[in-house]
Image 1 (spheres, rainbow, N blue to C red):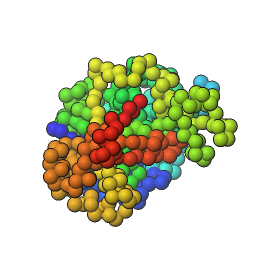
Image 2: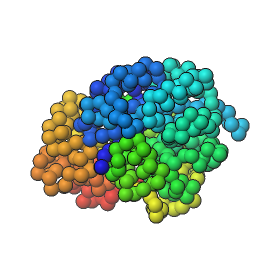
Image 3: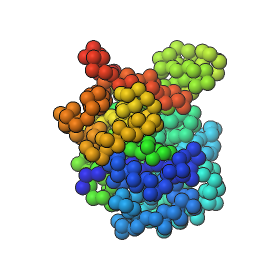
Image 4: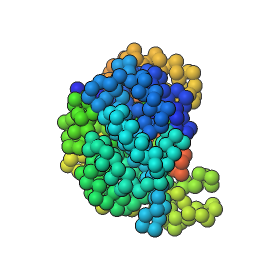
Length: 410
């Protein structure tokens, strides 16, 4: 069965999240976007977990249903600890197949930190010890390092991460089967490091509002069950794990190096030229994802491993509409235009990735149809994001696309 999954989101109990991040609204937006399997996020928070227990119906296959949408129990843990003479800050996403296992995890982890403090709790536990605890509770638990390149809070982050997965998880590295690439990197960047070849690279929205759900996602053709999804990821099976849907990584908040307060955006080459120092304030720059990938890569740009899972780049439909009509993506005009397209022509994913070009041109306003086609073809200009600031994107207009070739991403 072919379906779209977004595993990593947050509930209304996480900091800086919309109060709309609750089951009813999540299911409504999932239908509009074309998401069939949605992570719950935040199952470690007692209030959210109680809501999930009251609201979701157990499907008997490790998934839980509400209003036609399947949910998978997920949560994100922020581990802050000292190892190898450095403070480490690692985020991990946990998948579980039952409320019983979720309860056991919460009972155990409550001894290491206040799980009620945030939907994404901070606990003072080594990521390796976290893996040991989780796999000791159940072999059915799936552990995925989150947004692995983000500078401040990730497995390979420049500020607090490691140079290998073995250094972080030690003997439990063998039990890690998938890595989340994050918004500021895409599979092509990760393919440059041979040590990542054995892992399935997944992409998720890490959404804090319903509108952002699905901005990155995963497309499967397998049994829609907890086991079916995990088996496809563990096997890295291209027949069952079809492709990921990706942000243009330059749009991510940490693609380039820089200093947000100084308004300094720096490419890896410029950073090297300036000895990693901000030219405005003289302090060390926040080294972004592209630079960190360059540091660890052992392959040239453009290398594609034999067993790689394909991907498609996408810009959310609301952002495309906003770019075309020249208003903010959150404006009412965008909402009205969005509702004339979705679901009348198809879900958002279908419109952006599957509906044929001739049908788009026939059924949509011409400027919007052409903008969607330009995005599919990579005809965009992006001012890269840096140090916590999203990149700025411009979809090339028809006359521009004739004059400019597809952008050279890396």
